[in-house]
Amino acid sequence: MATQKPDGNDSSGALALLCGVFTVGNQQSYDRGIIEHGREFKKLGRRNTYPGGFAVRTPAEAERLIDESGKRGEWAVYELQAEWDRDTVTSDTGWWHALINDSTVIRRVDT
Image 1 (cartoon, one colour):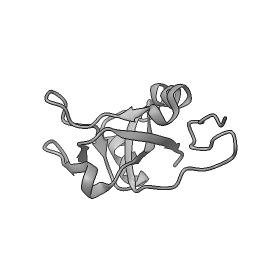
Image 2: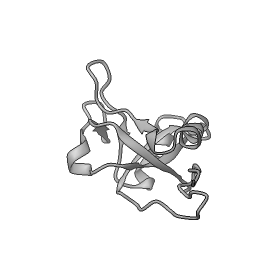
Image 3: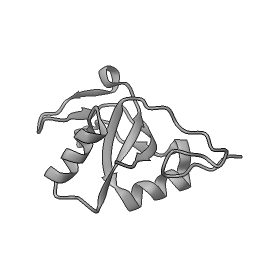
Image 4: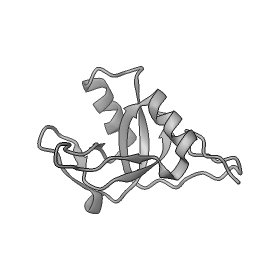
């Protein structure tokens, strides 16, 4: 059985395909989540009391979000298994989108 690694490779050497939706998260927590939970590790979508996780179109936009949030060195960029038009909406609080459906965190994207 293949084991998922934070960079998206599994122990068989397979690499996840780019889906075009990216997010940011605490690198230590997200890497651990990918290793421990594999495809069951999700970024949360919108809830009654939660607007949904950050969603952006490119790793460069995710890097911008990290810098604007002052989280350089703490957060990293992650690719989601999500579709832009189906799983995200314009955020009420910034230039990024908000994730409306829970989405699998595929891998960390090293930029």
